Length: 291
Length: 188
Image (cartoon, rainbow over all chains, first blue to last red; front, side):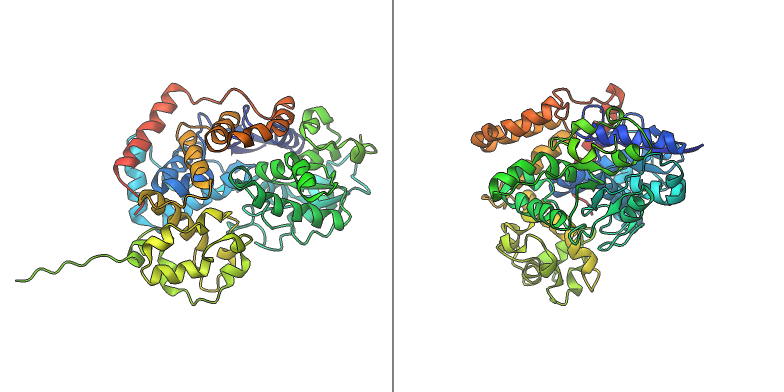
């Protein structure tokens, strides 16, 4: 059995808005035979806004989690693209900037913690396609997603600024994954363009413009649904789809799944354990022939 | 003996911030601006901001609205032919602008970021309270307009009224770390 430290992040925590992502991630890991051990007593990674308000404080927020994870000696996996970028950025900066490291070390010492910089932080998608692998995933497929046209949406922070596992502008991991589940990946020219991120809260009009472009790109390429790898992308595309329709007088009804939810369906797991009904845009019609 | 004091310039200040050192090697090709999904909303484009820093236009840069429209999508950063961390520069402009009290007043993003950071530093982001507090303090009318979206999320258990809490020991530890960080000033 392979083990990882698991960092759900606020959105995928028991009180967060992306519980379906957490549930499906856990369910899929059981089928594939690896275990995600949640980091004890973790705190919010700080996400992008903290670094914009107080840089040192933001590095310290992330460093506390990294120091706690280091005690387990395992790779740390997160399903959230923002957590993924923040932890990797913290690791990179602590290696690159000795003065910053000295400050962070001093702050951590005030909490009786020490971080040596050894935790490798990975995204959920990375471990599924690279550690477990497409072949092992294919072996577990009981109900192939034959005929389902899926737009593979990466968003920004899983591939940029580039901590590793796929191309920053033309990634292929999701397409290959869809292929091993028996589905059909549609062309999706805007697959690594921004959904509007957290500006959906402070600058809704600007974010809705960006979300609308994504829905248009997926829809015009014939997609039945979109898959995402990030809780915030899912919220913007799903919960705000009605706002896009209202603003632009469009009529999109594209279900937006976490990629692990579709993996679970292909593995024969139930809609309930994957949290399919937690989406705002109903997936009923699209999934009628698979469940 | 005449003592000579050297006043640090704005460009030096930016260079001393982790990730900010690239500002001196920019060739003004404009790739960052061309790659930015929000460049058309900014009063100064990303490449203009760099030129302005080098011209010492501290006040104009820090009171610009540009960095507050940055989505942190990192497209500029991966495309920059000089390897400049443009997104990191935007974050540095944001935190400096808060520190210097020069925040642009016509965008709500700084208020949202501050509130977000306030909750993060307590250990966890309670989504419902964060959103409600933000809308009620900035634009109560929008809080009203958000009701259908919030209701849809609430009904599906996606907007929790409770927030996840750290253990008392974990919370004390986090506060001790952040207090120390605060006493150490900005990231050097």
